[in-house]
Image 1: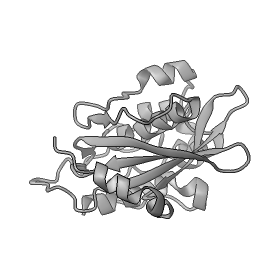
Image 2: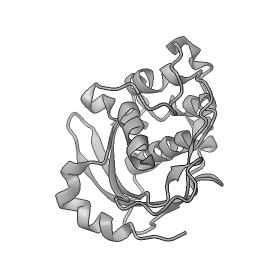
Image 3: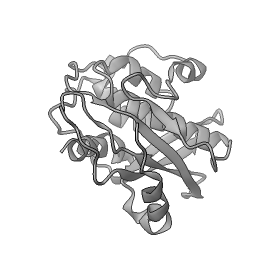
Length: 214
């Protein structure tokens, strides 16, 4: 149940740039605040330094080291992925949303994060270890690049869920649509969660990867 609910929130928060649909509807999602509540802007370097690239105590992230190129767009996509899971493991969203301003395009930020910059506390954050593997990158038109990862979410669950079992559908393909800013930084302009169109290309490899144990 948790995966389904969490992915429903994810769809609202992350695929709207591709589908233009999306306010979260799950009860554990904070209520929206006016975009004017977004607060002060930090620099990109300040944002990068705040990111817990290996996750947090309650939600550690393990990266598969092989195969991922050290390109700017892949690193930027990794940052966007970390922000996503960091946000969902938190009970206080505003400080994390401020980091997101430097990781997302202006349009994506204003549509998906700014309205939640001053929310009510989240009382059932997501916890548990996750494992991430880079799968590939491909051009996505107009100078954009789609970067895809495989996420093993077998042990990802709501903090209030007692006796959580390993998820049957634990292998998730998630893609980040990356674009360059005028100052040549790569930022996320969209996210496709459970990217089924790439199942023929990456599905078997992702399923084989998603067999970890804590």
